[in-house]
Image (cartoon, helix red, strand yellow):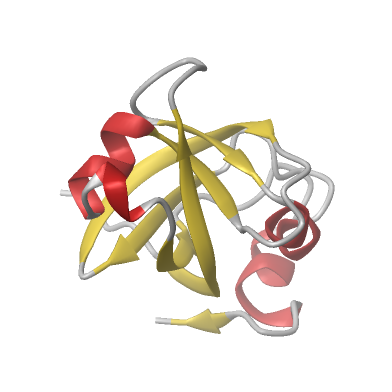
Length: 114
């Protein structure tokens, strides 16, 4: 049995988009990319709003007021698509590629080991 360490990262707004690679993939907004650092691409995150979905950050968006764009099927697991936007908490399940475990778990401002 393996244990996955989740690091509470950041709260903000999620939206959905109907095009793209589909379920399990997401686009990171500028604030989320800054929080994760230069190795953000490929990071697995958990996005929660009561319920949770797990996605891989493999795209980016220029969405200044949003943390993350989810595939429509992932957003629909959290709320009806008609909601359009949703307040979420994003937690990293894998460290960004360029960070060391020490930096990832303890040195970044705003990160809290759960």
